[in-house]
Image (spheres, rainbow, N blue to C red):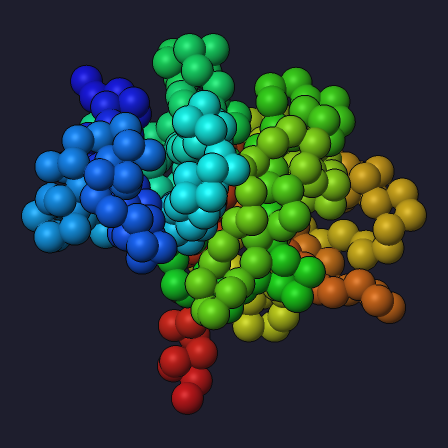
Length: 311
């Protein structure tokens, strides 16, 4: 059992100290002065200077820790930062990187039981439902990782962006639905989520999830993807039950619920063909966020395979 704090002490701080020491040396400070500012021995600074220390590449290449090293070096060199203020800056960055950042990734490397668990223990502590079972937030976090890891999914992200939503049991409104603030987008061909999921972060995907769950309580998650003829063919080839609804915004929630009430079995996806100013979209639905993400990836791969066959 390895705690995140152990990872920070053993794998993060030595590299961060070396990064700051190097920047202080560049400013002309002697090893003794660098040691005083970092609170370490002169021998340790000499070790950093000669490259006789282990470099944690994930930390050294992290924009967050590079920025922190610059701020610390500038502040410590000029005297603008007190030791307490420097510690506060370090704590702030470490806490941020524990939330799906570098520290989180290093922690998962050292503690295999956390891999793929959508862990959010460092964010919400012992109150996390992860202790007794997958949490709603944790499920969305894990589902987002599934989407980010699938290169094929990038082709299915619509112009408006995607989102992955998962409702609490008995959810009554968007505030009971966890999703990604700001939508999931594609940057340089990679699927990215701009922030950690939170409740009330989605409207349109949440509206679909709530409409489906009102008829089929076991279907509480969904992710939106672009929709066109190729996507429709791929979904039908997979044997999915798909339901169409009107794209207009007015009364949308009621129309979604009405469309779902007309079917006897839980749908695998809902879609609309767009309208003036409204992009055509399909919503892949499933019992959990991880399953919804996995189904969306399956659909993306089916679309890619169909496109390859048609060439």
